[in-house]
Length: 448
Image (cartoon, rainbow, N blue to C red; front, side, top):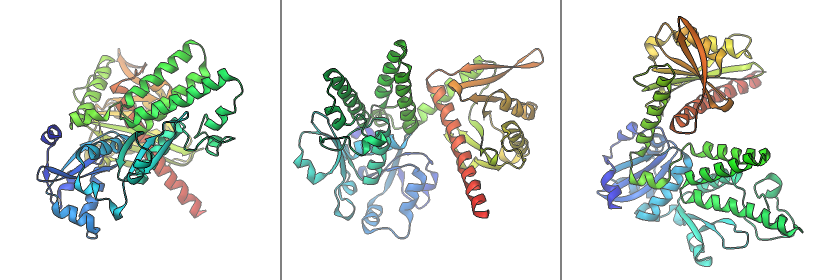
């Protein structure tokens, strides 16, 4: 504990210091002198900590803010990491205001039962005595957060909450208890029954490893299984393992065990720096010389059969989203289903704002050669490098000048830090475009 307290920089609490916090997931710690008195998690640190300066605080929160003198925070990459890190720190430090639970309720724990078909259950602290010596994770202050995370995990690794019955449960019909222990017990073929039970137990093993905070180990195990199936030409099961990896990456965006954040509170920044460094090396190696990737912009278009077409521009500074630079574009041209013309419109409108919005070190266009060519024509004279990112196999589409002409070459990105940062930027551009498209679509329904 002392090691972490020494490493964490502490900021004296004032009504304005929360304005300097990042808009990223993480945990925050309130201190009374050198003693941690509260640990909390947030999907957006700035927004969450800002809420503590409201005029209408509950009595317990008001006492916390009267007692707290300093604040520290640790940025992480995902909601899941924030939840696991919060639980780890609460368990290790037992902060005063985490122990005094809201409305005298007890915090929530996750338990894995010791049965033929282990169940994943949630219990309150008084109930721990009823089922002792089980694998227990927590405490988690927010039952809503716990249930949300378990819901995400269950879609990847189905599990059971019920005791053995005579037929498949309701959740088995929607794939959340699959294979269902009830169905397994009804299998007559003993070899098939044993094999199917192993599938269930493997799911539980992965869940335990995730709750321990070692997400990278789960991804490595899934990748190994996928490769084994591929070598056997069992492509159906290989695809299932690949889908699990993709879903797990979607809810984590990181390969980092939570203990690493405790050992190095600046790990988030260190990871981003290494990601950008690896990305820059790839670009330099393929004919795009860059000295800096401090500011990256990414563009994407969203529509349904051309209707309510919208585009997004997201901006990352030092590998981190900077939402004050985000922009939405409502596509004006009539053929909204023509992605090339939509991108042309976006490029022309972005070019008009190089002086007031600023110039990026790199532009990424979500798409292949056609979308890339549109941006190249607009920004080549401005000296702004542009690359495309094709969704198929996560392929980087790179323009290379050769004897006065531009050749397009493709580079399939390997798994690693460079791919992580590019996927994160592209996914954010896609999300932001989709949000605006849905807004336009809802507005059109209302108007009609």
